[in-house]
Length: 443
Image 1 (cartoon, rainbow, N blue to C red):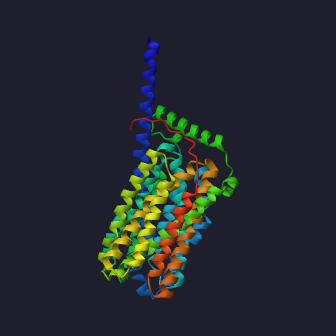
Image 2: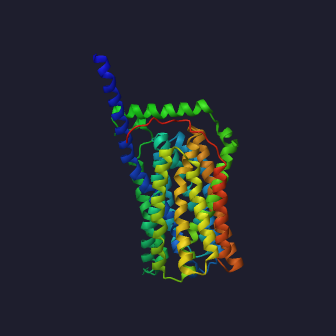
């Protein structure tokens, strides 16, 4: 009789451990990961706000600005895959701390450029400093979050990008109007936004924990449950197929993911670095008004990522949840191309299209985690992200070229619409089986 009573008691205790471990990991890691990516994103895109004054002050054409922005992605790609493998095999804590301190220093120095060559060099070294940060964070989250929670965890990471715009836009709008110590406001933008990266990088070294087995802040039963659960997922993936790094690189599904991500980032990163300029030229609004309007896609992005990530985890469906936001963004840019002379409609389509695309990111990154594990996963995340980031070079250069060549924004808008729709179609051609069927538990 006592034996029968002990079974539900042990089941309840196991469920309690599961809930405690899951909650404690989320509360400990996700706010800090969110903070890291906010600092990262602000430093990466502050050049788009600075360009509201920088190009005019330094005499840069659209093509010079587009090439300079793109130089970031050339060096970024060079060190992406090795850096992601370092996170898997060595230490996320030490590597991410190194990344943040070095990119903060380069960001500060960017505030003192005077020529196109210096601008190109600053962007190149910023890409080298920041390389592997994002895939390293994805690898880090796979060390801590089970498959059933991974879409939401990655959504929390990605939600930092629009949140960074919420913080950075009004701050940039204010700074662009100052002139301290004979330095223009756009120079202060780089200097003041580089300092937090150095500070948070130092904190990272002491705060982050590399793996659950090392987490002194988890109880013994919580730590044991999490290690066992993650190991079981690893074995389940290997039963389907245990990829080597080279096998993963040659898998057609991985190549499709890479192609889709490249097309998506060609549009997304092109939009990201040009949207303040787009809004300014379409509307003629002041710099302060332009930066205020950019809060709209940021708010849409936060809501879209969290809702889409949650719904994708709940339904265990990834492909449509990735493709629909891309196609919706593409349709907004089609309408923008058609109604670009109608200022209210054009601005609405631009802001909506820029906001919709955010929702695709976290779900997309949950797809390769269903296929790969360990070093193959880390290297593949680096490969997908590095080739995808080349879209940042291609998109920004093509937009600058089209603007200079046509003296109009229409060609750039049509180009962005095309790559978004093509990316959504590419993702829908994928068929990836989820190796983990998560047991239904109440939250």
